[in-house]
Image (cartoon, rainbow, N blue to C red; front, side, top):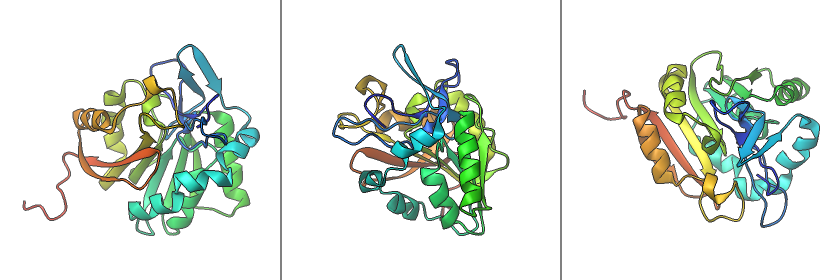
Length: 250
């Protein structure tokens, strides 16, 4: 998210890596800004880059960065949600929801459905719960996840991870377990920073989309499609490998 400290998803095995906040956090203004989640989907309170660890405890202060209107120009949240093609009754888990940048928009996009905003940082979960109440979003629930388990309360049609995937350790085990949190029509959407872009985590922490595809396939998923409209990030969609593609013959 920001150059100095970007939040999104951390790893399940590294102690206190935050699984989610980073994913939806916005970078500070400027070309060198880094955008990452401190927790993601599952919520991460800490983001580790080398020896450094960042906490995201003061949600009100982080919200000034994560919810900066300038983020919309490159994150393109409305286009992302439109590309997901969610029916109005969809159930969604935003892993690494942080202050609710995507979670709030998703809740409005699925008025008959439900959104679980997952984060491993308690103060982020507290903030999102209060925000949902203040904005009258009864279909948005804040969930305090754990680094190795997002604690999604019920099966969902979509799990969204924004700038969180690269923070997760033990990804194969994590995403294999996540299969049990998907409905029969469930998908996983991964948005993360491309290599060589001016914002995002350190270059050595980034994964190429081809590497993400290999890891997800090893975890039991099949690649569905990629959207290329985000200027700094790739946007990949996966479904359980056991689910038959639409139109496939039995």
